Amino acid sequence: MARAKQYKEEEVIKKAMNLFWRNGYETTSMQMLEKEMGINKFSIYSSFGSKNGVFLESIKCYKQELNQIINKLKVSIDGIIGIKQYFYDFIDFAKEKEIGKGCLVTNTANELRDDADEKIKEALSKFMYEVKQVFTNSLKQDITKDEATIKLQADYLLISLFGLSSASRVFNKKQLDNYIEHIFKNV
Image (tube, rainbow, N blue to C red; front, side, top):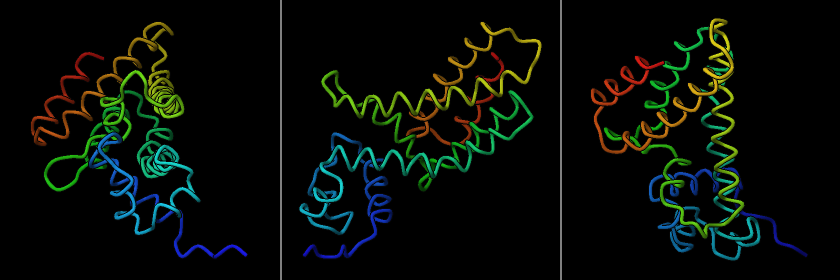
């Protein structure tokens, strides 16, 4: 007879997500996960299969948390102004103390090597594609923009968000606000 789990998967995944977010995928060891999640390796392997499995579940958890601000943009009728607000909201979302943690997806993408697990690369690509689609839909609210312009601007904004995410780990709020303002002068 199998023993009942003494933990809630959602709770331990949230702890793992924050560990990956702070330390990065590559740096996070199984020992660190055990300590942070408060469960042993056997339980981790039993519930999630591997470190990669824990990380993939962490990405899902991250998306759920980020949905608070993504959903705000999805229902916005403010077009490019709504996207700009999303950038400011993202800085607040990613903040830990005075310096931000960046974006879990961006942080991971920055550290992955060519030989990284395909499922992880796929999860990161899918995540970025979904954000780009939200940007695209907001840009389409401006009926003066043609499809080619919308596509170029959605790519520009996604790459700018990627840069903002990385910058939020190092620069102060005033510098980040200045960066955001300059991004939107070019759209």
